[in-house]
Image: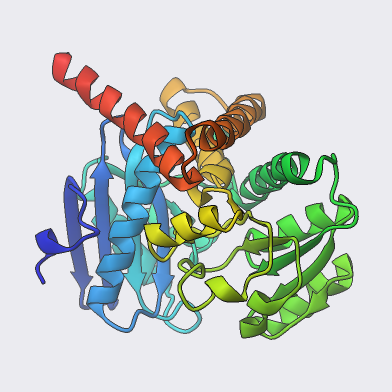
Amino acid sequence: MTLFDSPSFSNHEGVHAFHDEKTGLKAIVAVHSTARGPACGGTRMWNYASAAEALEDVLRLSMGMSYKNAVADLEMGGGKSVIIGDARTQKTPELFQAFGRAVESLGGVYYAAEDVGVSVSDMAVARTQTSYVLGLKDGPEASGDPSPVTADGVYRSTLAVVRRLWKQDDLTGLTVAIQGIGHVGGYLAEKLAAAGASLVMTDVNTGLLAEVASRTGARIVAPDAIYDVQADIYAPCALGATLNAATLDRLSVKAVVGAANNQLATPEIGQALFERGVLYAPDYVVNGGGIINVASELRARQMGTAYDPAWVETKLARLIETFEEILDRSVTERRPTHQVADAVAEGRIHAAEAMKLAA
C-alpha cells in the first residue's frame, strides 16, 4: 500500500519525513489542512513497531487536529508529528535540536507542541532551533503545560453528560473508570474525585498510579481489567483505539468521556455505542482545552501581547457549548455523536476553504 492509498491519507496537504543520522532522529510531520490557519498539533515520541505504524498514527492524529481546531473555533489548521523512538531511553537534547531544525525547514506551515512522550522542556530545546514551537513555559506569551486545561475541558464535558443522563450537577454516587493517569488523567482524576465520583483506575506506571490513587481514594486494577469494571463512565486517557471490537462487549458503562485521541478504533464502533445507548463524547471535542491553551500562545505572539487566561476561558466555555449542541443534534437527528461532530468540523473547514478560494 502506498501513502496515497492509505485510508488515513484523507487528502493531507503534505507529509514530511525527516532523518538525522547523527542524532538518530526519525520523524514524520503530517499537515492535514491549513484552511483555517497554520497547522498546529503536538509531537508524539513512541517506540513504534514499524515506520508504517508511525505513518498511520500521524495521519490519523493530524486529521484529528484539523477537526479539533475547527470545532474549538481556532484560527489554526491541523497537523501532527511523531518521533520514532523510546521516550524513556532515547531522548537527548541533540535529538530535539534536530527535530527543531526539521520543523524550521517547513517555514511556518506547521507549529509543534508537546504530546505523549514529549515534555514542555523537550519543546524548549526544539525552540532553540525554530520559532515554530508552542506550549512553552518561559516568556510573556508562554502558555505552559496544556494538560490542566485539557483536563478541565474533559471534566466540564463529564458534568454536561452527567446532567443529561443522571439529572445531577455533580458526580456523587457515580463510578468512573479511568484508563491512564499521566499528563491529563491525573488532573482529571482529582477533579472527578472532588466532585464526588468513586474512581477505579489503571496505568502501566505503577508508581504514579499508586500516588494518584492515594490522593483520590481510587481503587486500582490491572490494565486489561479496566474494561470489566462495573462503572457508570469510562474515561480513556491513554493511547487511542481502546474502543474496539474486543472491548465493546466488556464495557458496562452508560457514557464514555475521556482525554485520549482517536478513541474509536473504527467509525463502526461509534455506531455500535449509539445503538447500545452509550453516550460517546467525541474525543477531539472534549479534549480541546489543551489546544485552546496552546492557541492562546500563538495569538499572543502574533499580537505582541502576553498570555491571556480570560481568552482561554472564553474559548473553553464556547467549546463546551458546542459539545452540548452536538449532543442535542445527536438526539434530534438520531445519529451518533461522532458523526455530528465530524459534520460540524467539516462544515467549518469547508467554509474556510471556500473563503480562501474566493479571496
